[in-house]
Length: 210
Ligand SMILES: CC(C)(COP(=O)(O)OP(=O)(O)OC[C@H]1O[C@@H](n2cnc3c(N)ncnc32)[C@H](O)[C@@H]1OP(=O)(O)O)[C@@H](O)C(=O)NCCC(=O)NCCS
Image (tube, rainbow, N blue to C red; front, side):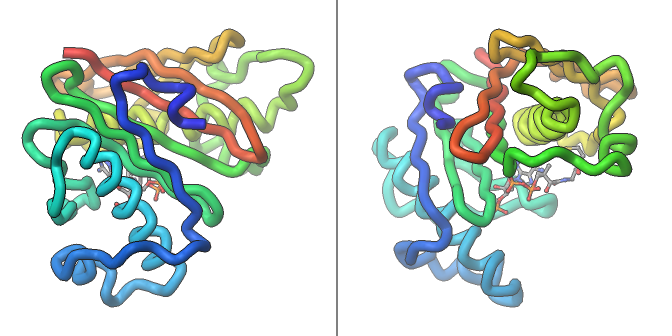
């Protein structure tokens, strides 16, 4: 589903974290050595997807380490992003010659609670997308869109953003626009993205061209 969201010059690899992954590099293993089994499985499948996506750019044998905020430390020549749920995992990679950044996110297609909605959404964001969308679904999409935007901007800005620091406008044609409404980071104030719902999941992607 992620490859339907991104331009065709992205390499996108998806996987199922419930299935056995190829082995991690020793340096990658150390990142999750004290984590619970579920986290280890999801991390390993994410790294496997990333490894296969990097191969599309001729990059092999590259341990994908993480920065202090969990941001993957991609090879210099590419941009990339990883997402996972219990049942689905994906990595997207593109050349830095064409893109400054990318963020992808997948969530279960389930409404957010009222409490979460209040902490994530501004009332202006709660639009009607069509009869097939209960209002709770809109909030789940806004949540996902903001996470994708966050992952796209973070490697460029190192800025921590809270949900309420961003405002997302969803459109019924499968696009959205997210902008930073507080203390805007120096070089990423807003970005366009795309969303979709499929097979019990919602997915979002944000990318920035050079
Ligand atoms: C990145 C974040 C937004 C989403 O993480 P999540 O809920 O675990 O969701 P996902 O499974 O879709 O994505 C996790 C992946 O995102 C990537 N990621 C994590 N932190 C990142 C960051 N700062 N920048 C870019 N990518 C990041 C990692 O690849 C991670 O998987 P890995 O640890 O196995 O490598 C969250 O973990 C986070 O860092 N939050 C802090 C900031 C925040 O909450 N802001 C609120 C609005 S987003």
